[in-house]
Length: 416
Image 1 (spheres, rainbow, N blue to C red):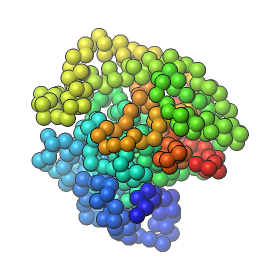
Image 2: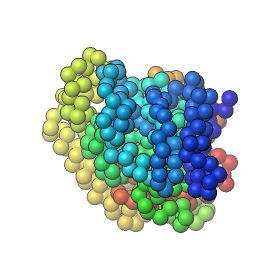
Image 3: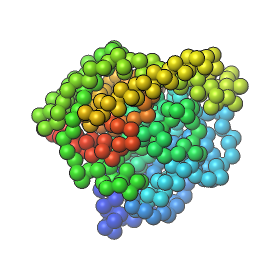
Image 4: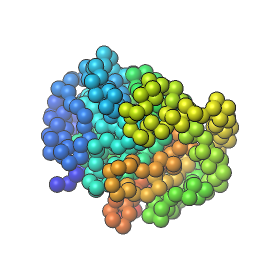
């Protein structure tokens, strides 16, 4: 059975608009694919009956990460603490927005415990013995396997970009604060951001246009001015990912992009170090009720909350100052360049299901609250997916997606 068979959102939307299929038929197709594959993948927590809707997407099936409130379903957050949670009484604001855009939520997808590091049961469609990443594991796997063409995630460290890279799909992390997080069980208010997965960047573009009402970014792609971030100072990028990044930069330059190295490695190292301080400090306060029963949590989450509880206000403010200063410096960078290109993860998905991989290559960008697109396509020698990430200016999702669509078209000619 081919477990990695993504479903084109763009093609489905065209079929829906031109009457070649219906929302009911699309939902039936999604449920059939779930029935066919989910015993192996374990991407879903719960399903609902078909719920009709309307909007620009025309009835596209949608997966919803199980930290996002979905009316009449419990929000269990991948935790035994929420096993008996009552159903949500209303949708989260972000789900309301996606419904208005024409997406039809099909059910809840698996998350790691409270969107941190303790893995759920989901497996990677590209290789069942390898992690799908975290924390948006179920949503990434559901899209990569063709169960749904669109699924929602969230990112506080690397919870969207990393699973997209590992599973071989595209993703968008929205700018921090672009949409409210009301109705989402978060970890860190200054870091939590919404995300979404689709088969490719052009699919993300049509989804973004439907969500926001902005023109489809895929219609006006153009060569960007690119800074290439090799992440040398972090010393985590493996040879296959480094080779993928080099190839991507080379092809984009040959196609007309301006390509130069990102030289402020020290800045990114400082931001990367500041991120976990802020995350732990805020998580200990955001999840104070869970901290009070830490013995009932997974070991990684308990350690995070205990570390945050022991972090002083002075340490927290120092980290926040580092991030604020970095934000000013990066704003100047984006005055001269359009995007930063870098590795989306250290390498391919690690073997084993006991951990979700390292989010370090997302920490600095997430600290700044910038939008990020994960661009799939490359593979390592074993055929496992490798993704690169494009980072844009705050609030510049449409522009970032336009450049990412251009990059996707250029790189499609490479022997990915």
